[in-house]
Image (spheres, protein in one colour):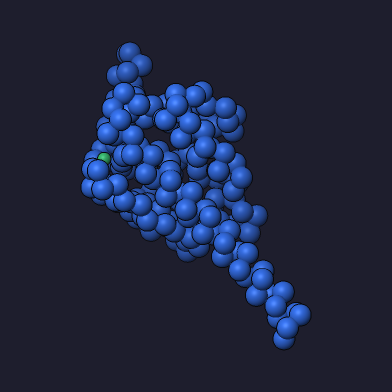
Length: 164
Ligand code: ZN
């Protein structure tokens, strides 16, 4: 099988049977994304544990096959990854899609790399780049929201100590 065909098969499979769809149990952050160019919508749910590891991640969404496949592949790639590592993977993914840079992260399995690479074909279709990147930008927002909430909680705790 040619690489191009393998990539097409992966996208079709994830588009038709998205993994980790729905709200995951006791999520503690979430974010919504929208791609008006194509009408794609995504809502990412994240559960980080107290060591800032992604214990669970899922999504709800509707849109084209690329956007669904991308969100599905994202959940399989990010689950189990630590916060900083998750951010590096997002950066790597966006560099791959937008600038055709090589994947530098070594915490990914070969299967995960292949799944991510399957989306790299969109670089030849500039209108579809947003379809492939939307879920990943939305994940960035969800991770940031978690950190902001955590910081606010810490500030509240400090306030209680110094200004009861
Ligand atoms: Zn789309």
